[in-house]
Length: 391
Image (cartoon, rainbow, N blue to C red):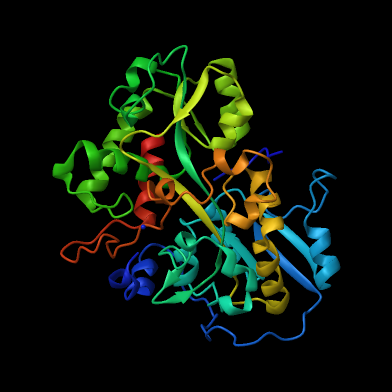
C-alpha cells in the first residue's frame, strides 16, 4: 500500500556562516522567533498539535480507513492532531513562517532554510527516546544538524533512480547520459523531476563527465559550474516530454509509453508494475532525500510536538508511514513490522547504498564543498535558473 501523490552532503566550515549565507539565499528576514536552545525536560501536554507535512505522512483514516496512525497517537497522548499538507518545499517554507504549525516535516532542500531563518527549534534528542533506534548513518547529518546542534529527527529516506522502458531502451543504461547527452535518441519521451533541486542531478552528471569543471558537490556550484549545469538542462529540455511532480502522472506516462526514460522513485516503478519498466543506478551516482521532523521555533504546543516526534519514530509507526509513502524506514526494528521484502526493495539499513546518494541540500552562497576562494550560487539563483530552463 502506498501513497498516490507527492508534489516534491554542510560541514563545520559552512555551518559557521549558515545564517548570513542562507539569508542571501532569499530565506527572508524580519522573523521574530528567537533561538532559545533545546529544552532539558518536557512539560504538560497541551492537548493539541498542528503539523505541516508532505501528503501521506500524517494519515488519520480520512483518505483511506485502513490507513490511520494518527488516531492511536491522540488516544495514547491526548494530543489532537490538525494537519496541513503542502506540495513543494518552497510552499512549506512560506507556510512555516506563519507560526501556525508546531511540527514541520522537511526535506533536505528545506531544512537549512528553516534553521537559518530561525523557524526551527533546536531539538533535544534525549527527549525523543525512539531516536536511539534510528540508523546511525541518518543521525547528525549536515541537512539537519548545525554546529553540533540537532534540529530534528530523521523520518525515512529514498533515492532518485533512473527508470527506463526496456522495449525502447534496449540495454540497461550505465550512465545518466541517456537523459542528458544522448537524450535526443528518445526525443519527446524523456522525463525529469520538476524542481530547481533537479539541477543537482545535472551537476552530479557533470562532476563525473567534465571533471575540469571542478565540481566536488552537486549542491555547491559557483557561477561557472551552475552555468554548465543550466546549459545541459536547456539542451535536455528539447527532448523532455514532461516534467513530473505528481508521481501518478509519471507512472501513467510509462504505462502508456509516453515516457520511456527518466528520473524516478522506487515507489513509482512499483506502481507501474510492468516487466519492461525497470530501474537502475547509473555509474555517476544518485540524488535522494532524507526527511526530518522539526519543531517550529514558534510552536504553541511544543510538548505535544515532542510527543509526535517520538511517536513517528516508533518502529511500528515509522514502518507504516514509510511503507505507505514508498521510502525506506529509518531503523532495523521498523523493518520487523514492514511487509515481506519491502525493506530489501528499498535498501533499508544498507549504508553502502545510502553512501551513493547525494541527499538533497539547500544550495547556499557559502560553498558546501569547503571552498573559500569563491562564492557559490544560492537557492534563489537555482530557482531563477530553473525558470529559465523550462522556458
